[in-house]
Image 1 (cartoon, rainbow, N blue to C red):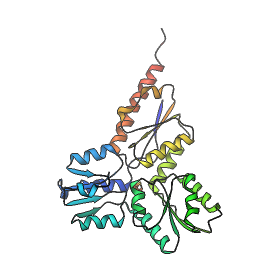
Image 2: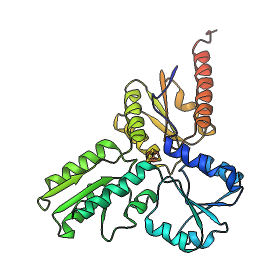
Image 3: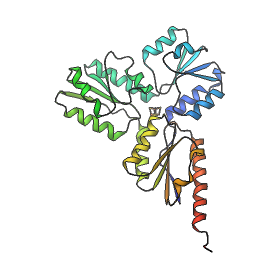
Image 4: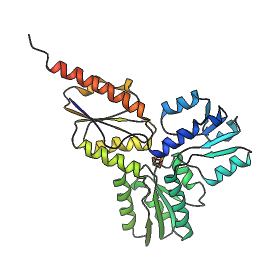
Length: 294
Ligand code: SF4
């Protein structure tokens, strides 16, 4: 059984920078992160072990017990940042520059009188940050949401995408919007980030060569789910796991070539651990095959 890693996988620079900032010795346990810094349970667990607190939910600000707070790599609305500083907190901003690019792009579209549309997952923290300073907006998650554009009564739409969306899906939805009879003018900037694109292209290439794909990443990680989706679309059997302990040997029976990929918030040590475990399974499977028949 052959085992191959995707040519691009795992932690992106945005996530690495955010984790490194959170672990800086200057904080010494005096830091609260608002929401998960990255969508990876194990990373968040090790941050907690280093004395970093995490608060979440509608009353997140009320739960803060430290002087210093951190905005996650997913970004936040300016209104939210102001709320934090008004509460007397010192704000450290780990927003990824590629998320900030989406904030800036949509703001400049609104200034040019385009009605803002975000293609993404409405309840995702990144999308909440993108729309958090806008008076009016639409989030499109699927074709089912397109009629929302008509309901606005507007004819000029400015469209951006959540950074971790699937490239083909976004292009398809923008094509559908352009065809709508109620739409005169579309300004579209595809703001899917390069690390996400690289991982989607790499998993697609590898999916063409394998008969099983193992996708590693947090179950709540949007970009990891998209990697599974790419495999599904290519009819390649794929399993989404967070850690090597979830690997099931049954998946590997009679498989010739297994691929491994990982989302942008999956740290290298988890990928290495899963890779080693799969190599061990591959060795066992190969040994079983060459057992002499008595
Ligand atoms: S996935 Fe993209 S936008 Fe998100 S943190 Fe990584 S590089 Fe930045």
